[in-house]
Length: 92
Image 1 (spheres, rainbow, N blue to C red):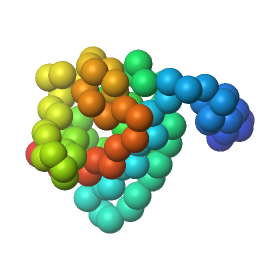
Image 2: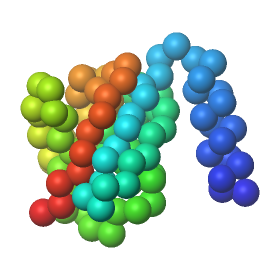
Image 3: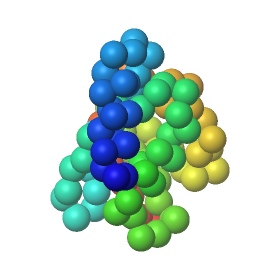
């Protein structure tokens, strides 16, 4: 049921213009991608359900930017992660 809801949300987002495509690279090498509304807080990586810690940062390669938990309420768009981004997670 949860997977079905996620798939329906993905399909709805594909039809909308104000969407951010986020590819997350985890410390174990795993990669997961998802679409989010651009006004979603950037801590949305928690929705992937694979983080076992709350102490992490999101990092972009170019330009290198570190997004820490103290700014987690910032939207994907405000953080400059819209319309498409690739981030990796650094565990503290």
